[in-house]
Length: 459
Image 1 (cartoon, rainbow, N blue to C red):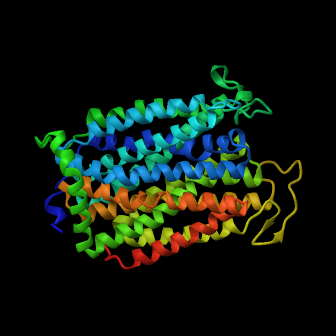
Image 2: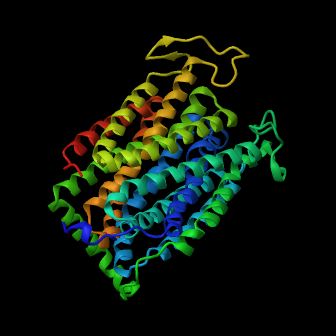
Image 3: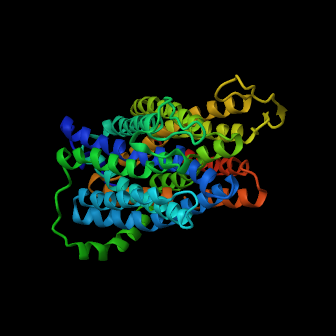
């Protein structure tokens, strides 16, 4: 590997440029928070699918399909972007797909014969688009700050994303999505714009809301953040070189044990993290019967801890290094999976019986629910540092001028098997007819990821 310090900027970009880059995470996060995890996904499992178990399986298959497409597209597009230079045109193209796919979710209404296909296809296309856009945004890191600032920039970006998810979740649950029984939002209000709770319009509005949010807040990136200069190579020639660049990048990574082993580790532990977020809200809805209020408040609390964790993790990254931060996060996530596996509607710790909640116990009234909430908050606190330190570690390992293809390879390593964990969860759920099969599958992924990363040279 060439010395990355000679290829990265010697000074930090302007504040507006940095802010524009940070707002990309803010712009994207509502899709993950509202659609993938806390509102639309539980709505799909509880209102569109025939039952929560079937809903979790179908959502898992859609997540797996998106991961497979990402595994193919990300490294090739990253190599093409490196060859042509600018990253913003690619982000704009992906953004258009994300907007269209998100708007399509509005039409996944209960009782419609086409609702399930629209929901799954819109979710899958939106996931591919937002993840590919992130490849190009990540590749801009080495061109904005010197290497000693990578951790803080990456961690702040994740924190901005979590904060954006929190704000969007409060808006949707407080003013738009109402409980179909009480007909009121979390704030006790009637939904704005005449949204009908009986047809779950408040849940379905998360798609168009995420699209408009992205369109508004991604604009500073295009207005203020400098792009990589155009190389002069035509798109046709860049596309022809894309596949060969991917092969050479993989070969280059294999010749450098630290890079290759890190990418393998990332492949495994990111797979588990994707599945954890994909099924967290579905698990709460299916096992404990949570509705919009419980899920929404859970999401708000988790997002707050995620914001704090990402900010702290970025500073720990710059002080201790990325590897210790990632290893610590993996260990914590593994214990969380064991904790979730030990829970049931009427027991904790693998069989310790608990009393059912009394009518006046309020939200999360039972002991299993309280433990699940606590475990969810732990997931939020470590997920941001895990992801932020992963991209800062790679930014330190590779040449700045080739960041696109390596971040494409990072996306490949994070997605090439990302269909396996959701697929394993979906199959295990279908076979054993219990949602508890999901956490059991993910523990193995985390153990393997820890072992692989342990052999990576500390950076």
